[in-house]
Image 1: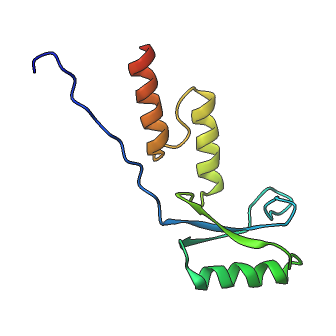
Image 2: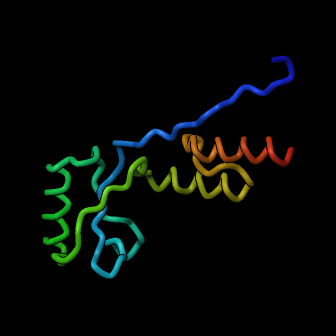
Length: 114
């Protein structure tokens, strides 16, 4: 068995944490004039969160549409957003907590070197 490579299978974990957003029938997501998306942090299938975002959408004049779960997505502050933009401008991965991006970067380095 000398010289053989160990076999590795990566199994992507399906995330149950994330946010619910309100998607309109035309496919767009409700957001304000500053680009802030209407959302609520939740676990997948959280009926209380779905009810809250549905009521909020109706209140703000968007009765048509539906709650849509976005797994693994989280809210960030304006400061975090600014830091992420700066990291991208410097050629780094935007979010230090984005495990998928780190895995992709490592895969690219193994395939193509530095």
